[in-house]
Image (cartoon, rainbow, N blue to C red; front, side, top):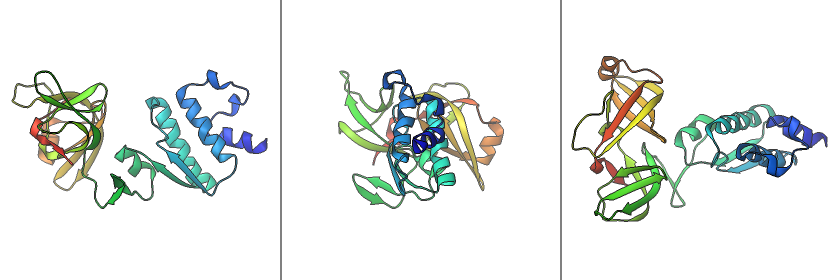
Length: 223
C-alpha cells in the first residue's frame, strides 16, 4: 500500500486512490498507467508514446512526471515519441528510427502521415486528421515527408502567391544560431523555420507572435 501511495503521489494523483476507472479522463488514465508501472520499482521504465491522444494540459503534466522520475527516483526512462522536440526536451540521449532502422541525422520537419488523392486529381499529405499539405507526388498511402525550414516564408498577413500551402500559426520557440534564427511555429503541429537575423529583427518577431507560414507543394519532399 505504501508503494501505491508513493506512485500515485509521483504522478500527482494522491487523492484518486478510490476513483473508478470510468471516472478518469484520458490524461488521468495515462498517469495511472505510469503509477502502476512504478509500484514494482523498476530499474528501467519503458513508455510507448506516453503523451499520445491526450490534451496539451496533460501532455505538460506527463512530461513533468517523466522529468521527476529521472531526477528524483533515478529510474532510467526509455520512451518512444513522434515529437522530435519532445524527445530532445526530455531525453539525455535520442536515437532516431525510420522503418525500424537507426538513422544518424533526422531532418527538420520530418512527419509521418498519408498521401491522399482527391477527385480533382490533386494530392495532399495528411499528418493528422485536420491538417493537410499540398504535395507533388506520384505516390499515395503512408509515407514520411520532410520540409526544408529554409523553404518556408513567414508573414504577418496572408498574401497571394503560387504557393498552395499557407497556415496561421504561433511562434512557440526561438533559437538564435549565429547569423540565423530558428523558429518553431505551431500550426496545429510544430514546424521549424529558419530565417536570417536581419529578417527576424526587421519583422519584430517574438514568442507568441501570430504569423502565416507559407510554402510550395514542391517543398514537401518524400523522405
